[in-house]
Length: 147
Image (tube, rainbow, N blue to C red; front, side):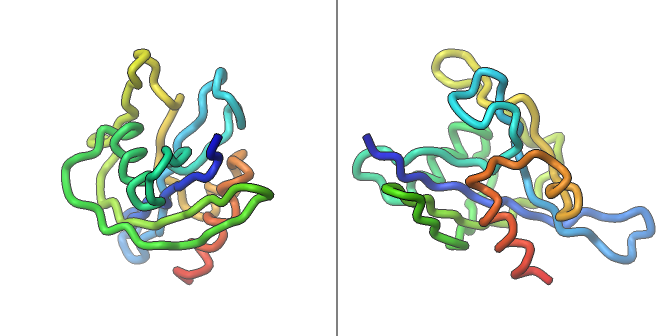
């Protein structure tokens, strides 16, 4: 069974109270209490690659499966590739200038929503959450490239 995966760091800027210095934020979803792994952790949108699928196609499929997002074409670019034993996880980044009222988690074929929550988080906020361990290198890389 292929355990390779692809995930995306969605990002946008958020206005601040004083409107002088916008804050860079990433989109994270909270895993359900019955998730097969990393129960209750916050993580990036993404998943396991299907047979014959490229990492880019995987991440685009997962975006559609998890977020109901079809509003605009996405400009997805490579961020990082992490080898973990026998499998590889490909991380991408993409701007997503959507407010929370336009984003929602989608139900899968069994009628189950793949997450318990979704939100935009600044670097400071993200690292106060319990992040999915596999996503931490990509989140760190992303914020280090936008200093």
